[in-house]
Amino acid sequence: MRPLPILYRDERLAVIDKPPGLLSVPDEGAGARSVPELLEAEGLRARSVHRLDREVSGVLLVALDDEALALLQDLFRAHAVEKLYWGMAAGHLEPAAGQLAFPILEEPGGARVSARGKPARTRYRTLVRHRLASELELRLDTGRKNQIRVHLAHAGHALVGERKYARGRDAVLPLRSRRVALHAWRLRFRVPWTGAELALEAPLPEDLRELRERAEA
Image 1 (tube, one colour):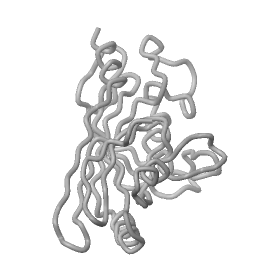
Image 2 (cartoon, helix red, strand yellow):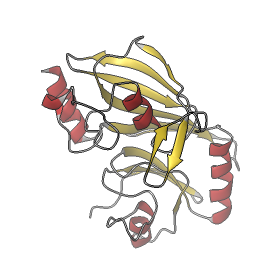
Image 3 (spheres, helix red, strand yellow):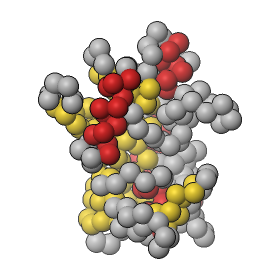
Image 4 (tube, one colour):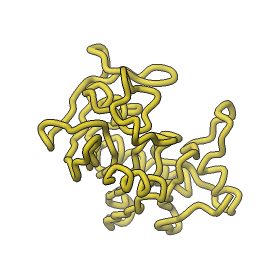
């Protein structure tokens, strides 16, 4: 496999542009390689600070020592990290910008909306409306398991390529995608040990650019 694209690296952290199909953390039972394993093969001892679903591409923060890992994870727990995603969802959300605030119950193997779940909030903004789908900018205020995917599916606007949480007839069959159309495109935070602000962006990968072209047709 090709070396992982590194968007930024210093002595204590790195920011990776994760390709789809890779795990964020090692899982022997999943039958797939992980970002830390591939970085270790390149001579870097790294641990992922947060997770992206296996199908999801984009910006992933990794720590290069144990103290850095703890400090960076504290930032996520304090909601001090701005996470922006690009997604393509079925149909057109009304209003064009707003928030989804369904509580999410995390379960083994997935998650679902439930009154017994924890509070979860996803902010969205419509970027482009196509005939069958919409391109969205998505911002996580909380970090529940599969949050964006669960919220959009529950709202009746499942992401294109969603096979786990979509319900009923797929409204965007002509826009079939081999994976969920979700990309972590921007991450911004202050480095705890220096106070410097980092803002990193990962360009939309080729498969999602091709999906966008088909949506425009």
